[in-house]
Each structure stands twice: as C-alpha cells, then as structure tokens.
Length: 297
Image (tube, rainbow, N blue to C red):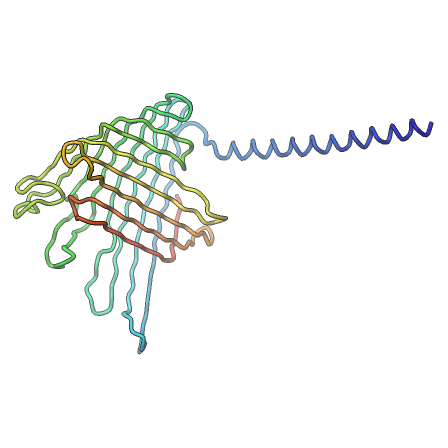
C-alpha cells in the first residue's frame, strides 16, 4: 500500500511539472504570435506623418574662454503613404527639411534645405525578394550661395533638381530593413540656364540646362532600436554613371538617432555625408543635434 501511495504521488508530481512546462511553452508561443501580429501590418493603405521642430541655442556674456552667441532652428516634415498586399508592396516617402542659424554679428544663414520624394514599388518574386521599380526626386526650397563668397548665388528653388528612376530587384525583410538594387537607372539633372552661363554647374555643361546619365543605383534602409526609446535610422544611396567615369561613385548616407523623452519631446542627432563630384570634389558633411518638438498625424 505504501509503494502504491508513493508511486501515485510521484506520478502526480511529474504531471504537475509537465503541465507547468506546457503552460510556459503555450504562453511563450502566444506572446510570440501577438508580437508577430503587431509587427506584420495588415494589407491595404497606411498613411502617417511626423512634423518636427529642432532647436539649438548658445549664449555667451563676458565669457573669458571665448565663444559666439547663436541660435538655430530646423523644421522637418515626413509623410509616408504605403500599400501592402500578399503580392505587392508600394512604399512612398516625402521628406521636407529647412533650417536657419543666426550667429551674433553675422547674417542669417541657411543650414538645411531639402525636398525629396521616394517611391519604391515591388512585385513579390520569391521569399523576401521582389521585382522592383523606384523613383526618386530631390530639389530645394531656397537660394544657395557659394561658401567662398556669400554674395554669389549658385542655386535657387527647383534649381537644381535630381531625378532617378529604374527597374531592379529588392530584398525586403520588413518596413525597417530593405535593399534595392537597380542596374538600369536613368538620372536627369536640371538647372536653370543662368547658372551655366559662365561654366558648368552640378554636372550640367556650360550653356545647357539639363544632363542625362545612365547607370546603377543601390538604396538601403535600416532602422532599429539601440535600447528602449532610442532608435537609429540609416539611409544609404549610391549611384555610378556607366556613360562617364564608371568607377566614380556618388554616395549619400544619413544617420538619424532619436532619443524619445515623451510623446512630444525628443533629443535628435543627425549626421549626413555626400560625395558627388558634379557638385563638389570632396565629401560634404552636416551634423545637427538638439531638442525636438514633435507632432504625429
């Protein structure tokens, strides 16, 4: 009788242990399924926007170590219009940026100026691969001046404009991780003719107002969380022209780090570097850090 009782208690203990393991496994699978549902967006259209005002200020008064008082502000608008189905994906992004800075004793200067439209259409091929077609348009809002002589205007609204488009293949893991390779890309540069009266500008020959190129483009996007409430966004674009100096690759890389304070306040860091010898023979860089006031819609 004693042996039967011990055997019964043993079986009940084993059953309890296995029940707890099964419950834990079921709970884990349920959590994974919920997380996957949240990550995978439903089919159809999705629209979202974000407006940001970034502010910087420095003040010095009888400061023996030196320094110049300054104030600067940057505004940014991002708007996404995306479509998703079982076989199609279409991502559309509109980015608009404008920034000014005022240094004590100097005139107001422009620090950022960009208007850009990106459109990437994909038709599912196999797995995470898609047949793709992309379109990119870049220009500016305001006049730009020669860094060596601030009285010489070298650009203005819609001059220059850069347009790229072409078919390719896209690998898309998610909305936050994708790479598009377009080996047959057309690129058109347009600039007002008065900027080429005395010489070439932005790659456009003297006396002309446009330039056509044919080459290959690689575009990559990767966004991830460094830690809770801190995200890093990487945007990489490259282009090489088959028709001229094929080994001379244009590069545009942007890093955006956002540290979220609450729904409306963030600390933002932006770094961008550009190499395009049609505009400037060397790397152009910009770096911005400040407190951002955000409004999502």
